[in-house]
Image 1 (cartoon, one colour):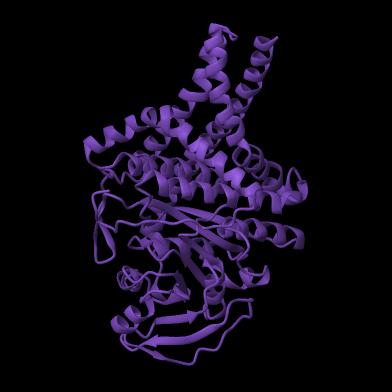
Image 2 (cartoon, helix red, strand yellow; image 1 turned 90 degrees about the vertical axis):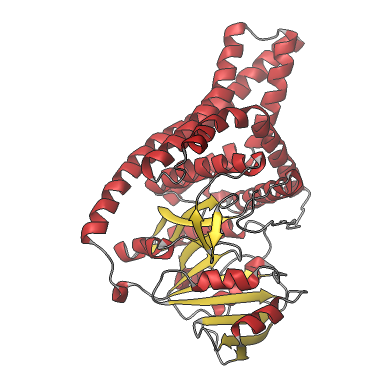
Length: 467
């Protein structure tokens, strides 16, 4: 009887892996076609459609800062060096308990200035508004602590431009990254939000706030995250963008139409997944209003970020990500399989709700049950081989496809040795790291059901280190 139960459970779990990896396989096909079309667009754009300075709309960069005294000056200088002709930088000090404000005052000669708000999103109180006497386009808002979402809402309240770019304080934008992010807004006036690709900066050479040399991290943990980011952005973002169903724009680098974000109420402060929740809420609201809109992704608009280099910090991050995903999916679950919300409700939402949100339960259970059933001889040899190929090797193949797509389109890792490492990473990731990640996500789901609200910590080594 036990063997029969193990057999049927194994069949059910195999079905989950078929749906998950089969879905990503279909996304890879869509992604490949989308990247080919985008490459053709870039060739035509560079020769015939170069944007003049006058054509670019003003943009405000909003960067929340909390206890960033060690890096706030360097980060702010990096924001000021972004290649964009009409940009304001708005740093929001979210009630830091260290010397963040003092460092900003000293480095940029801040003085109190009048800047009336243009919106009235509910936030913690503002203590002061300052303008740099060295860089007139740099403003600093000092406010009571309220969290990242609250700081972003404060920045939106004081934003004077039609577009704002939400960024993490440690994000480095590449060259013309912001110009590329603006393109969809100019091409289609119904665009309300655009995301760019986020890459791993660990191991890269950074000078004056710019990544000058791209290299793989030396440590294995950040190195494996390079592969994860390639797979997530090339399959997840490019594929869903091609289907018109983008649900996620990274909080590290996203451009939004300010008017629309204010209309839907800004960022929610009662979730740790405020970036995804905002985008899903925008989809829901605009669909319900019958508004024509677009949420887009640009694969060549690059931002660089430092990823965790220790298991403890990485576990905390993945726990938070899973809690944020679960909270968003449950909060808006009326969209699930609802044709009123188009392909978002009938395809993207079910994929994220069933396979990504609650998938870690089935994934981790699948690994355990497969091992038990194999040890007890409860499954046949052909079934064991099929399960192994679908659950393990197909996942590794999809990661390899992501590396190939990256090399064929943008080829950031030009060193032959590093390219060979990238091609072998899918096998390394498949056995051990992927199971560990499933366990962390499972714990994150459990944390969500226990109503855990903590943000966790991110210990940074700094850009340009050997991590």
